Figure 1 (cartoon, rainbow, N blue to C red):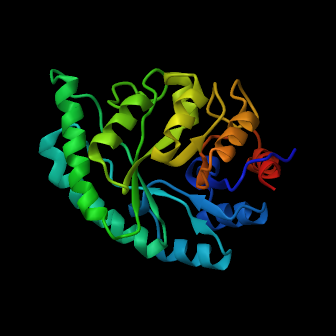
Figure 2 (figure 1 turned 90 degrees about the vertical axis):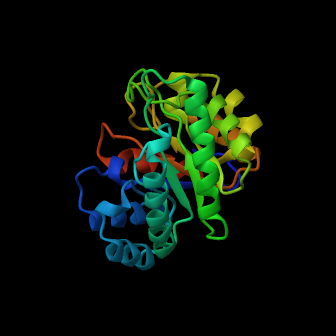
Figure 3 (figure 1 turned 30 degrees about the vertical axis):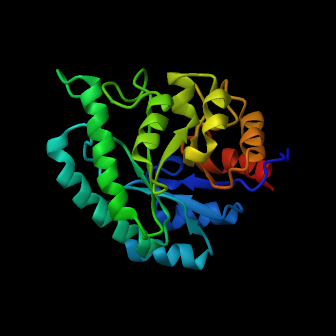
Length: 258
């Protein structure tokens, strides 16, 4: 099945889809299936020389990786977060990666959410200064607390977009994880389409289970077509744990993008 999806580009999160598989084998398999981009989580746990060699050999783009997991809800951790971001910007530029994904940290017990929200905005304003002129965008990630991330602060995409508006920097956007927001909010296209200019990256997985996009209750063909028609031309990161051999689900989804 081919879809009318504009200029959307799929990227495979090899850390999830190929969990435990050698990086060379994982990236080679993704390339052989016709994908032109891959992503992963922790650059500091990887061999950067190997990643550069693999992306060059297969003529693939590294769509995203993460910055260090340091809380932004705690002002006392901000300097540590910004130091980690500086390191991550250097690594991202070295890899030709234009998007860094940032979690924001857990809720701080006994601290008003207004104060934690303010801490996030202030920290991201400082982060924007580090990102300016680098060609790298930082995307903050709302996650569900019901299934996967109990205690996490940023659950609703609505608040994520409010934070982006307050920070007011083109270098700070949102990664909209369709799986997480189906659990947290539902009404996916109502959350996505009016805010498409604030979204710098997407993640996708089936729900329930966080498995292949072809399983579960989320109608990905319709969602991808709507995103494609919106004018968004960035990456859709396939971040899931397959129930079948990884090639099966990836081949099915690759057909959507041909």
